[in-house]
Image (cartoon, rainbow, N blue to C red; front, side):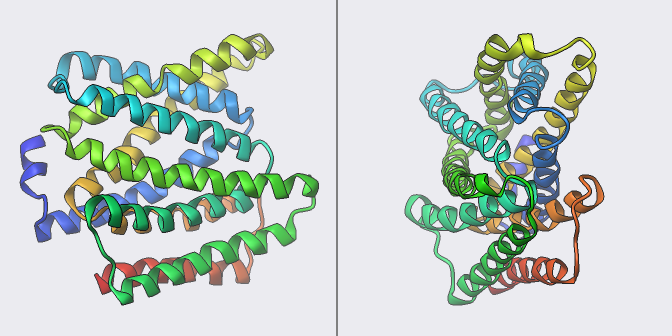
Length: 300
């Protein structure tokens, strides 16, 4: 399968597969975010998910995929560092702000920075039409965040720091998207990067969280938290794996923008699962987000 994927790089078939993978990543990323904003504390939820995907990845990394080339170890070290900063910022954001307010801000700042970063790192350049699509998508995303903010009644005094943290988290999203695209292109087998990254990235946070806060968990909470960790781990594999494969097959910036249709899925999850309201204005803004993604793809 690795050879087949590598053979599609830079081809029309590869571009079409990258489009499908980016949209799959969008839906799964929204689901992944919601898993951290449910019943459990975001720190505990994220630690359980990390532990789950590290344990699942270990046999894959050690026994199934080719071992990383020597030059990959520094790349893994930097990638894990960036992702650790992202997870800390994300948990701080989710613990302070309403999901439907902070999630669009995170996802709105991420693609803008990523498009700029992809231009600097990979020499990618958007057309004027694609920039119009980015502007349309960002208008929908930030408009959705602003509208959601108007409806928040609980913990409004915490929303300003939550929004500032959301922008910081978006910066980390751009950093890891760009750097991970570099990392997966630096190894011959893309699944080597995925398996080893998941195994290494899932070690630090569970140790830190469960060492400091494990005593707060009751036995009654453990099964639900463990189940959330397993579901989150599987979701992370397909979400993160899909977007990384998309960045290897086609342009990093386009994949990053298409993934931000996750905001639409997040709003639907917030409505259907978390009981948050969705009205005609939100639907219109969600349509604007989708239109922006379509413009970016069409104009490219």
